[in-house]
Length: 128
Image (cartoon, rainbow, N blue to C red; front, side, top):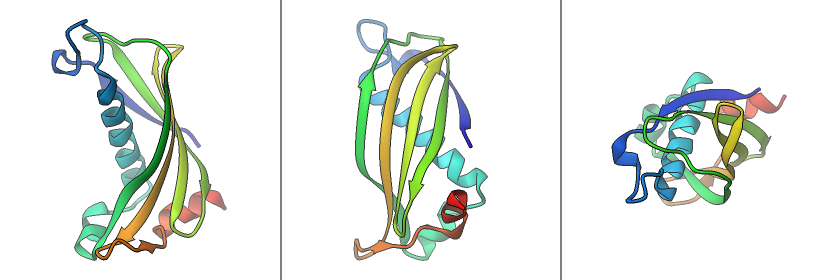
């Protein structure tokens, strides 16, 4: 399953050269992951109240092309693997048919003490 999340580039997203500032791609893919998790029926606010949160453990990314003010982008997210407390996702940011950014993101769930805990059932079910 590939989750699709639209993004519009605003002036505030750009740097002095008029292109999307590199760190904003991480924001775009974060929003897409949150939207994916929500769409799978996982309530992150309820998790937080129970003392469990999602955190990024690792990101490997490549910047392949630039995006500019007012570009319509789409973030594609695919869950690659799920284990007890960890999920690995491939994400890409596209402008039309052009892939401009890719990332492999490892996320984990931790409790208030910073210890890993099992992923929500909705996420684990994606690998059945």
